[in-house]
Amino acid sequence: MKRAQNIAFASCLLAALLAAGGPDAVAGAEVAVEVSGAKVTDARGRQVAVADASRIVSIGGAVTEILYALGLGDRVVAVDQTSRYPAAARAKPDVGYSRNLAPEGVLSVGPSLILATEGAGPRSTLDVLERASVPVVIVPDAHSREGVLRKIEAVAAAVGEPEKGRALAAEVAADFDAVAAGVAQLKEKPRAVFVLSASGGAAVVGGAETSADAMFHLAGLTNAMASLKGFKPALDEAAMSAEPDAVVVMQGGGQVLDAATVFSLPAFAGTPAARSRRLVTLPGSYLLGFGPRAPRAARDLAAALHPGAALPELPARSWSAEKDQ
Image 1 (cartoon, rainbow, N blue to C red):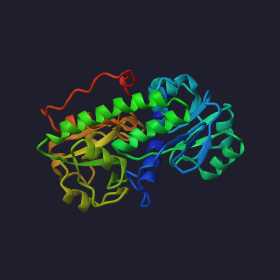
Image 2 (image 1 turned 180 degrees about the horizontal axis):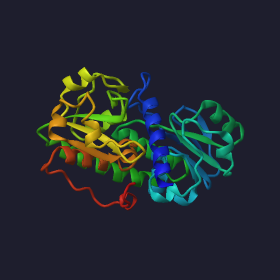
Image 3 (image 1 turned 135 degrees about the vertical axis):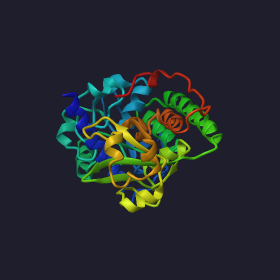
């Protein structure tokens, strides 16, 4: 059962990343969050009235993580398949994959509010939910320090807890700033490649304007595949000429991306990363989710590829203590 859940999660995360990293995606796009009485302005610029936030369906791993970090997990009545952290979220009813939602599944749990990350859908489902008189608030999903803070503000505003939102945002901002200060002292920026998947001897890698690219920048790395845009298959010659020092992959899921698998791919077989067998593995939602733990993921990635560097230890936070799976 656990393996099946991991495979489903990996498939959903892979599909979401491919869609988000498409040619029309603009990483780092920022969306202001405004609160006016019982209304919030969401990521689509709509004024949404929220009268009751006691029964929330949370769509998007970062949205769910923020709700729990705000101490509002008891209000969450259902989540989508990308909501993997904390463990309590995985025990909630599952309404499906965030980009292929069915209105019947979402409405079956009797929500009073639906919080959905940008890109959730399809649009026809969102239209049905809105006609059902359930407020649907779309949460911005930019991959940056400011983007994460705005996500927190957006979620907190929608559920009527702006003070808690400001407190959480302050903690996360302090974590980002501490990591940035440490990364700024690093003398080298290793060249790395993020491999999303591999099949048929070909690797799908993270190019420019992707969550992987944004995480690399936070961790003081150079994206060796920045000549590509989005998540795209890597041509063998392009990958080898990129000369990556390391390969970064997601942990868990149904596909095994261990060193033997990755460095047997023609694209990477002759690279410095293959010669040194330098492979870094981190949980997918932790590495690419850009929720409250994003600065911690950046620090862990930086530490893995800058051995011996004096990076700051981030303070313990109640919302980040649980081990990821």
